[in-house]
Length: 361
Ligand SMILES: Nc1nc2c(ncn2[C@@H]2O[C@H](COP(=O)(O)OP(=O)(O)OP(=O)(O)O)[C@@H](O)[C@H]2O)c(=O)[nH]1
Ligand SMILES: [Mg+2]
Ligand SMILES: [Zn+2]
Image (cartoon, helix red, strand yellow):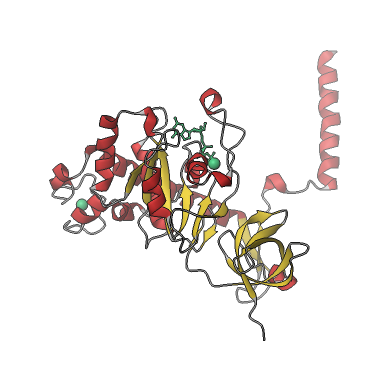
């Protein structure tokens, strides 16, 4: 039997998917086989899929199976990536060390086995003497830090080197220049970039879905794949449990190993090993750590509140031994008013009006 053709999902497209088949060096518009739809199999950018009914004439095919994923990101949804490049803007108007740390924490949680690469873009807007200390903070923690400008093309060679032969996802807040960087790296991509940023802060050409591109960088060899992703809101960033936040800050993690308290948040405890070694943690990073802990606590409380509310709003009906279904509990507000009640209310209105009429007299 012939081996099924394999392809990689580039992005969603008109209710289906665009799939690139290396063997045919072509892209196909694909629908999923009915069985996959029935089983509600999710198909996301980066998935390796098996194809049938491939028509080179029409440029169409049918996805019949999704291969096992090596890894998966949930926000943005992407499968089988080798590394995440987090882009932040050095523009004084946009730079925030805390935001940068929030993205690092998020992607470390999303892909625990791979340390994100940090790309600090718009370097043309800051003096070198201001950039170097920032770069040093993260380099000393073990992160690869690349300083770039898509305006001057500075640092683009370094970025290229870190991407070569890998499947990378380029992520970061909206407007930091992700699409602009990819356009300079590979002008053939012609990605749309936000043209009105300076006026409004938002623009017409923000990226709206994750898309995977195959790019040829420098030497020939393994294919290089880059996913341009939409900038996503800070509300979508993930938080760990508050006591786990320290694990996502390498300098805190190291000192926390020598902390004698289990479940220590390293915020106030007397004789906490982190607090006793504050000279080893950058002041701004510690502030950022404390803020992430506070946010993680807040998020945990909210999660609890929501689940209590959800529990209170649903009840099990029917079926024995837990086989029933969960349905919303009808609160007074949502109950349909009975005809009798409507009638009573109408009678009441008549009486009230009579009373008012009497008052007028
Ligand atoms: N000064 C300066 N401006 C830049 C640089 N890179 C991008 N920009 C500008 O920043 C704005 C946003 O760029 P985009 O490439 O659309 O940003 P993005 O990260 O793709 O944004 P989303 O698609 O919304 O996530 C545009 O006006 C670019 O011209 C840079 O290196 N220096
Ligand atoms: Mg973009
Ligand atoms: Zn401690």
